Length: 203
Image (tube, rainbow, N blue to C red):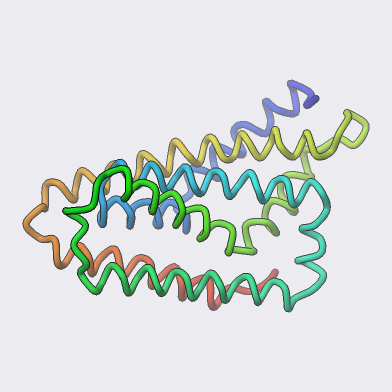
């Protein structure tokens, strides 16, 4: 188990990271603008699950493999770029989501959040660099500690990113008459995230 004092030191660091605007928050806001608050919360849940997967991978030591073999980093990264561009095209194409049931939109948003998170290799490299600072090999299972710390990060991210998406969704309701340009805004967010992922460096 994790020492309570170590966990107490980890919590404010994790909160600061969660509050820092980043790709996950922007993605949830894009989902909120496109499909509403419920979809943005579902997207945040998908991102949180992806974060836990990254924690498991890092805890098992597989993250070091991605760091050691640059071609693996690039393959995962370009899959993520392609998927984000596909989402951007779907938004900008102006496909109406009004006739789609909320549960379907939420399921799609959850899937999109999960895939976008899993295809961002920078997340696993960050997990591999940040979490071990708080891991104590003498305290027990390293994987369990990664799961605990990853759970804290994922839960905080779920709440904060979800709230950001709900805010964007409320703006969407207030601007209900501007559906076309809102599609362009959300598509632009997805495209910008794709560019950001495409130009990122491994270090």
